[in-house]
Image (cartoon, rainbow, N blue to C red; front, side, top):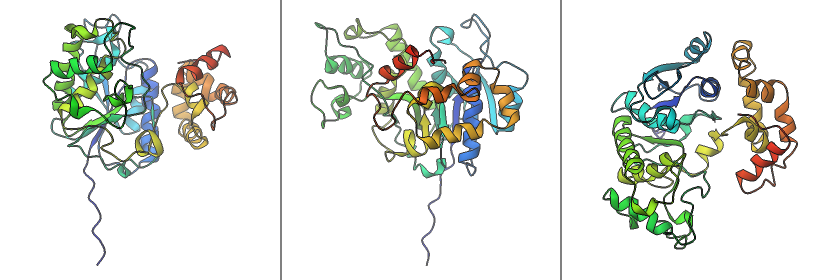
Length: 334
């Protein structure tokens, strides 16, 4: 008798679609999801911040053609209210938008600057054990000469929220080396309920922003606040590192490219080919050409000038070095 196929648990996907760069990235994300994962059975939510007191200008999606095209690509645009962050900290969108998703339904959040490269159903998400992207560098905290070290800073946060610090450590790495401590890029994360995750994320982020432990006195929280709170949330909800097999997210199934010059600089040929294929239909091209960095990088060939600057088999170890080289050559756009 043939083995019974593993049943795939349905889940939703959320990205943030804000007027300007993010709305165009959202179009590309939706097109990549439709092209690479046609059997995706969940709902794609594009969360749209609404005008309000925390936005000096209207943050909602602009133009008469973008919204209908997103919907044609299978997206559902859902509004959310910015009550705590808004323009002063736009990374807070990903926190507040979670409250607009259907309660009790598993979700995966992706940063809008992500491409879906393959079938999302290939990722065995464990929605009881959240995790986030380990494609990160040692961006936070930045240690001061006479200030507290990694252990003191991170332990102060775990203590603040009544969490067990020792069980969060990766003891394969030595004391005071940054990888020993739970730290993620917030480019993706997931859980069984967006409301539960969002409420905890909001609670921790606001507490850290408004009343940080003394050990954080020398630390900047802008733009790092979401990435400081995120590991605490994941640890509190029973998650941790690598609760899905490595090599799928930020690998063969998804690509968090961040900005288009970086995509052309460092991603594989098949990623560039997918980007150019999904942005080639006239109805998509017509809208995307309204955004100058996309028009110049993708449609006018500037991306290949960036690509020629780098050897994909021997890239600089730090992203900052890649960015600086692109800027020196005058090709940086975002």
